[in-house]
Length: 270
Image 1 (tube, rainbow, N blue to C red):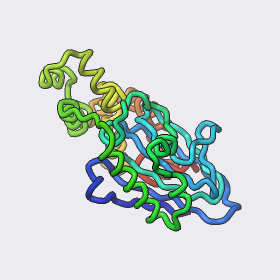
Image 2 (cartoon, rainbow, N blue to C red):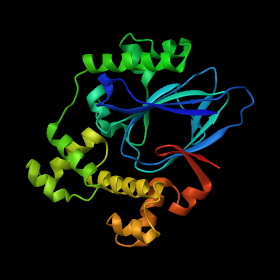
Image 3 (cartoon, rainbow, N blue to C red):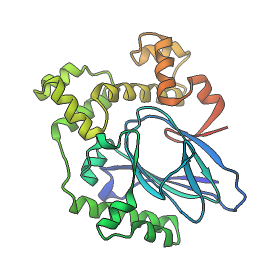
């Protein structure tokens, strides 16, 4: 089994964080179990239909789908001689690329081939016939650029401003401060943010704080767990561990002992 991480082309670098590729050979590969962790970002996955099947909670997933931001961890199982390509988008990708209300895809996914067929683009067919992962990525980029050109996209500079400040502050910026800067009521701010990102600003801030602590954990930038709690503005170590379990499905100790992080927020279970 081989994992690769590939940067996007310049034309899509404002929407795509990176592509990832998972490839395995041979029909006798045992199923592999993975866990995703909440990061506040949507994504896209294509699994070659002739080479394997992807399951979530024992339910087969579409061959190609786009998913919204997750509010908690999820477990994925891959079975067969799989050939999978994924895209990790930035938080604003669903409205910016597809013209979608991000809130409608929170914690769920959409069969992307159904959308592509309506627009006369045989996406799954072309991807399945492509001879290599590089060719499939080129097809996906062509489709995404078509989406950007043809769809009525939802762009909101004010909410993008708030989103950027939450990320830069690692979830610590006061929501009241952002509301005042944008001259929005609490209700309007939350409604617009959910439409643009898929979750409330407060939840996105909590996820950003978790991600900051996870990055610190990855880099061994601490002496003890209480340092992680203190550095990331948690009330105490217990509060930090509860939040970490909510978004990762593990305590920090379990994450290191029971999984291997292949890509950011995507771990293989031991």
